Image (tube, rainbow, N blue to C red; front, side):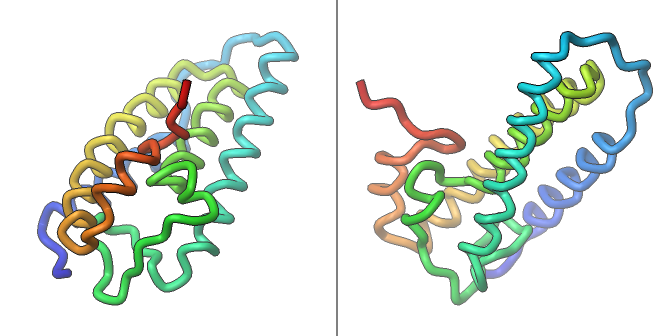
Amino acid sequence: MKKSSKDYIFVFIQFLLFGAYAFDFFQPLEIPKFLATFGMVIAFIGFMIALLTVFELKSNLTAFPTPTEKAELLTNGFFRYSRHPIYTGILMFALGYALYKYSIYKLLISGLLFIWFYLKSTYEEKQLAQKFISYREYKEKVGRFFPKLRL
């Protein structure tokens, strides 16, 4: 599928948010040790999810929301639990590290990343539904960022 200007805008703003996250313009607050530890555990798990998903994607990997011409629909591995596990991992890392540093600024950027990944994934899913007939059924079974709770 051919990339549109939306693809470039989504990626550009995503990397702007990553850049903004790298800096912190406010003094971190004091945090209880257990909360800092919890944050670091969440950040580590998120990092591992994102990293391992990169290896699962292999040639399907692209920063752009439009799938590549040779893309295949993955429904196993981390994709069994989340339609966008790299976004999940990045969000967990950003939130966990913000808790670890107890940075209100990083928490704010984490929230903006969540909103941006939601918008980007909505556009991406339209592209995936056009490319893969079975995507609609997959979408009903698997949560966007986190597993669907079946009660």
